[in-house]
Image (cartoon, rainbow, N blue to C red; front, side, top):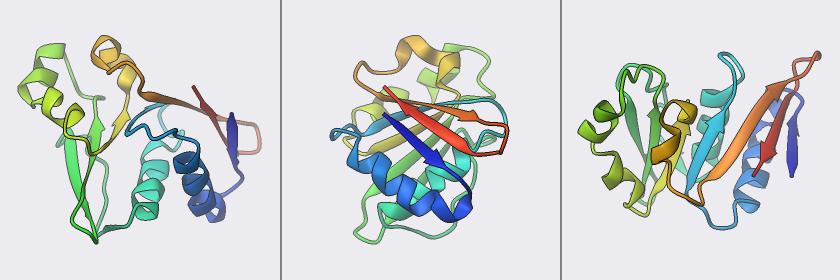
Length: 137
């Protein structure tokens, strides 16, 4: 399955399509180069889920928690600055994964062997016209 985002106006519909095709999975692993749009797409998905408040990249905090209007937690986790897997366990990653809440992961390739089986893997590529192409697996 592929979802094409032509520009930022298409983010809300792309987020909805991604959720519709997630098969009920709640752990989403986003793969893509720096600047591919991982954070922007995650923000759009969180908005589609009803998140309120300001959403920012968790590059320095590692984990941001957003709340929906219904009080549900959404976790945005960024592994970019992880130096070793012990750091991931120190932040309590297992608790996030087992919470039953949505977890959106950036740079999962840095901790590939701890990503739960069955996570939805989304590969983001940028074409020559700056379109984002999301490949789901």
